[in-house]
Length: 98
Image 1: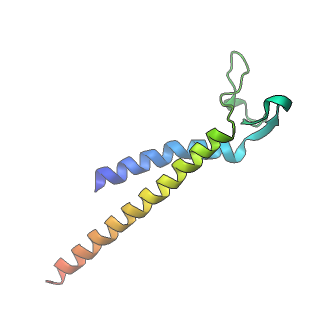
Image 2 (image 1 turned 135 degrees about the horizontal axis):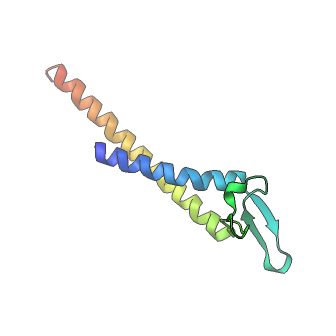
């Protein structure tokens, strides 16, 4: 159980960076090339120091991919919550002599 929880927390931490990129990003319109999400110009950490290029530029399909990943994390969270609940019930039952 501890290994599953640790793995889940690691995944959540990695995806939290993507979530912040999406939440704080800026949509750019490239006309005939369409729209993309890139970093807000006020955050220098999101640009390559040597070239000034954005560290990410995502189109709708990329964002949809992350949406699917976030949904999978929610399902995994529910599974882990159920495992913890079951484990606690088992512990309670055994302490009562059941």
